[in-house]
Image 1 (cartoon, rainbow, N blue to C red):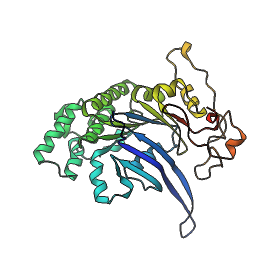
Image 2 (image 1 turned 135 degrees about the vertical axis):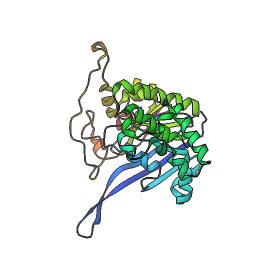
Image 3 (image 1 turned 60 degrees about the vertical axis):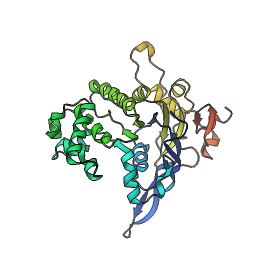
Image 4 (image 1 turned 180 degrees about the vertical axis):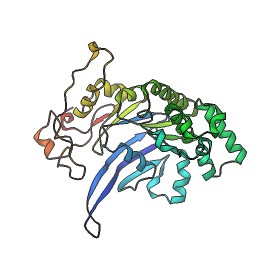
Length: 325
């Protein structure tokens, strides 16, 4: 891995307007993604974790240009995507692809799966018709499917096979960067490990860079090099994988790790249950957004938003408890 980031976010924000009244005037904003800053290096896997509704999927879609940017910048391979024309952005998307969470909902039930996988090649007019079909057959084999099955419909496949088709569709364009949006959460436990191992093998073979989005930290620990923890639209902690799991700094991160199921009762962690309610993203309190649930809340937490404190190496945490560290 080189030191130059492939993807670089600086102060990225994406808000949803709240409209009311007969004229549908904007009366407020839902801060789905708020002031996000991080880098992803070529060849690495950055895990993005957090509970449902924290903004993980919105951030993913904003990076790909599927959501409008409120403020901040997205740089990919040194180019600013937020200032690109639509034509240039469409061309750049060949290098940036998405693996969807639910393979049942992401595949057109009336379209043969081979045509679905080939769609990107057709849109960008890559190669001849024969070359496109050959690449589709090659990609089917690479993800562990018989190429002769590409003329079937989605309902003729199992959930794990449908997700392999989704992976083939994402990789058919030979991208450099892939966002895996909870790619195994909709699958049976028995096939989750197969799909995860496939993703790791493909990363090595094709030199891919992943943003791996998940809420299951046990899966994240198996897949990633670094972890970014997200809460109510903000990154509250970011560190190397082993550093974060061994020495979590933010109370929210500690609660997430404590919630990981143990294989045996002897290894069971003491679980400190979070109390309090999650505040509305449309009406966040002043100060730290985690204050209502934090077991170590201080008066300062209710007055000022904590900045990012570097607690050693690549470990940074947005929590006033880390100020002295």
